[in-house]
Length: 551
Image (cartoon, rainbow, N blue to C red):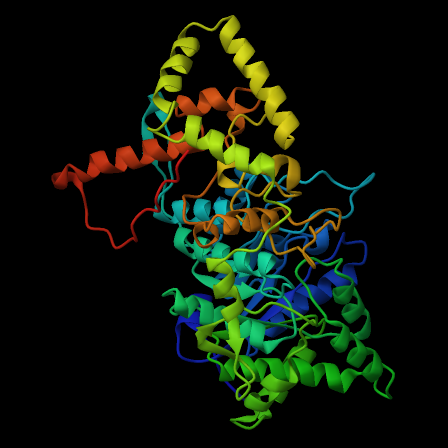
């Protein structure tokens, strides 16, 4: 029996031993106390076993309301440093999220998996209206700021620095995408998450070990090989395989070939029990062999089953995992891979990026999303909205004068802006415009989760999680790639929308530095002012701030 025990998740993921984590999904309601008691008992039993380093508790997965993860975490009553709480953005605005995070910190829960969350699928009286006030990148930025000492307005307008938290921040990435326009933005968004504060990574669900391994290859190629990656394993059964195959559960993928095998084994005498457990155990063995920090096991409702799968994984020979890699490659036909295939290992080659992808960067293909309207928008941006160029300085003076003395021209300008942007982009009049961030596609109008910092993990076959339109960020990617800008699509600062500006002129807010571009500029100027006073500065080991994009 392996005895991997540590006092905290942080120590497990940064140590030199392969650890195991277990997922617990709560229930909707507590009308069956026996079920709730079983969850508590299972969580306690898992943490009492030396093989389980931590348990991870989900936050309303699948978009349905359930008992909150912190409730179950308290009921388990174990060391909070061995519990991961999922924190999503779909049900709470930024104030409620921050309040929840303070509560977690006060109770000693440091391990947070920060994710955007699934789009709501049900609710009392109908489907709930989602929040998505923040996305996962902005949430990670908030948690990181809390770790550094969140600076907030205090009494009499003075800035107050709040006590520092000690969150160990996790993030997700979804590598199981069919098309380049879906997968590459996932990888670049992952880099952005790490730059703004994510400490560890867990992929969403799929059954192709080559795709899992590509995450580590990509991070290593970009200088982030030190970031721990957890291998994600979900033990299938026939019903779950069909659900994952349908594309109705965001970020969970089962290919046609794997579904066929699941259905075939499910017709056997044990209803596929042996096959499903061996598949899960083999995945754990591969993750260990490939140098992942840990394996994360879900889809199980009994503690004994967790232990059986781990025992099976540990009984395999030291090199069996190499053969398992070739067995567990259930990709879809024509699926895009970032790195070139290595037939000898069955994995991707770490030093050979997909040659077709490299050629396409030099000569981008035509895209239906690179429209005449997009070309025109880029030209207008260069003429009127590029800081310090074209008409920018003149228009800044004009809008400053109108701001001091509002009148007919300022009202007419706002009316013209609303009508033109609504006609051209479906503008929702948010007042804090992100069109330059998103290749002149409005995230408020065209993204189901209003994400301004990159794609969620929910797209399937190039379609939005809701399966009602093309993925917003896949469209953005194709536009930027056409102009040779895709590889730097997330190099800028985190975009956080300010609701105070809603139903005000985004043009005025741009020229008067009231939008997120202006706030970032003011932050950089304040940092520069502090840096010019060496007697008041302290040495920092933090990486340099991300560059501010043109406006």
